[in-house]
Length: 387
Ligand code: 0X9
Ligand code: ZN
Image 1: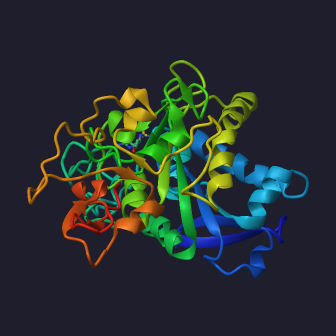
Image 2 (image 1 turned 30 degrees about the horizontal axis):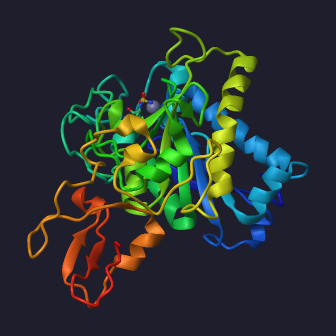
């Protein structure tokens, strides 16, 4: 931030159990003159899980790409003139330090779970299970056991790192968030708490993420995160369900077959992985000013309404939660839901119509993620907004 005073600002957003600062860098043109929250924003973060070092390096190199491109790269300049970018290279500084000093494969933060004054295998909270969204929903998606690598913590947002991460959303108007993890060559998006439950934003997620045949990050498999395994109290589900932020978990490449979490200490391989991720990261930033209406770099456009996500992603065919077509519509007072997957801006057209007499539970309503009281009229002469 000192080297780029016109565009970068350093923020301390929290303090860990062991007293380390949690740092965030805010990057936008004329930063000191732009009030917090004024410009649409994107969050990029790494190393919520201590051992996933490549995620910090990808986040850091992405930040440098913007800082250095601000003087000579028209794409970067266009983004920084309209959009605010936030970078948190290390979400979990205590755990990260511990992977250097004690245990290379440590994952969690350094909460002293049993308060015995010593950090050992029974300590630490998985920060990606500590968010207040379906927290503690079940024992499969997170654990109640201190020693588990997915221990969810004693309460939702019990951890200072979680609170710091959440506090950013009060400082900026995020449209998108990318939380880099490793490993697996995956591009995951909500929902993660339950299988077979794509979100109502699935069409826009697919437009950004691509499909298995044409992924936004070359060689990665995009898809709803519960396809990997279920999680609860997880960051991207929280950002999406409670902040209306489209959020992704890219699971980065391991760097070599069998390298797992230990990406090789090889600058060329690190740079290759950063470069592979750059186009997706840039496209997300380029879309922040118009998150509802964007053209993906795969050329996938989004329609206003879908009856079935398989219309844009054939891999989703027959998905029970996104195939909303019905053979017969039973009108006249039955409780049959009428559902579509609708672009967010369109949903306003069907909300709170005083003349309406048929409630339309929005798709998200079923998942309790967002309550949208939609209504349409069946009375003669009244407009039916779904026609
Ligand atoms: O388990 C996690 O928190 C993430 N994977 S990692 O190997 N980096 O630990 C995945 C989180 C994505 N969400 C779901 N899979 N539901
Ligand atoms: Zn991880």
